[in-house]
Amino acid sequence: MIPNLLEATNDYWRKLDELEAAYQRGDVSLEEVDAKVATLMAELGQERRAAVRFLLDNVTRVWREQRELVVGLGLIGALTYAWVVIS
Image (cartoon, rainbow, N blue to C red; front, side):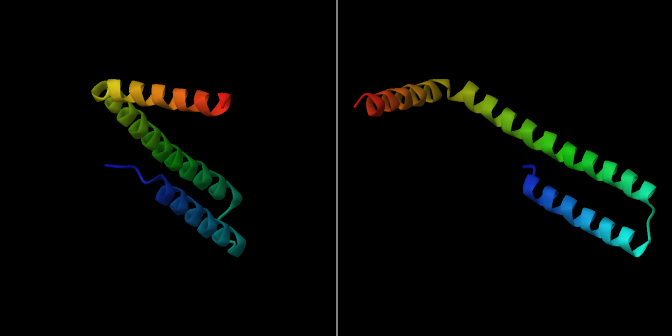
């Protein structure tokens, strides 16, 4: 499953907004806000780690399966850059 970091971040901010509104109304104490923010940050951190892990796993898989293609494209890119800079 592909981690949806954008959705997780939007959800995090929505929950923070709800928590701030509850605090402004006096429904939750400052200690409860601190505890909930720490929990929300941990959840978002977990989603970020999953997204990075997914990206690295895919890069590793592409490197293993298509090493020659990646090296070839890198060489073509380097030669093109050198040609443009020298010209």
